[in-house]
Length: 331
Image (cartoon, rainbow, N blue to C red):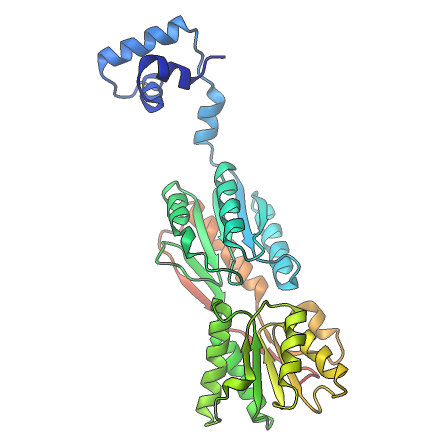
């Protein structure tokens, strides 16, 4: 079957020029006649499906998260899926594992699938600033983008996030209020924006209460997983009277480490988390934590993205959702 590329090659012109001829666009008369003769000779029939696909406004939305195993993200996926389905959109899910190359592959796949928009929530994982050129290309080609919990990189996109600084500021102040003074802090990699912001809130509360900031009881390495919470909590036993963890999974690991050492939570060491995943209220002792309003964040991200796609929104916003403290048995 003769293709538009074959016609362009025989005419010695670009595919774009052949396309303009087929669509009665502006082309030099002599060039147009030459192309039309070749089309007639080769019995070329334009593939209207390609034209249709190019013009089609798909009802597909791409979503990238760092780790589907983390309940906070699986919950977000459910909220986003259900919201989009109700609006007539289909969700394509990508799990980046916090790796830039994986995120890059997913973005390029979304482009091939001609998605109308993308929600990107990669606050955990490698620095993805190297993908700015891809984000710009997608925006230029009409693919709308909303970020959740990450930097905007100066792009014309919305950012929807929990106020991480405020969350750890509140939980640190609570521990100080109940008499804790040796408050440890463990979290994921310090290069991550979530880690930086949550550590900032902790530092702010400590400094305001004139408590000495002790680098020896701050550990920000590894991933936001149970095994790292367990590992870092063991390092702090004997040095602290309480620990604030970067997320609930780390806090669960920390509780396990303290129990295995023969100590009790909260009698010997109080433990606090961040996120308020569903299991936080079910473990023993139940977990005091910062409630991240993931349903609200996910819903707003969907509303904003569809608003961009349907032309109802034209100016980007940064929306910070205020968290609340959930008091339970662990502190």
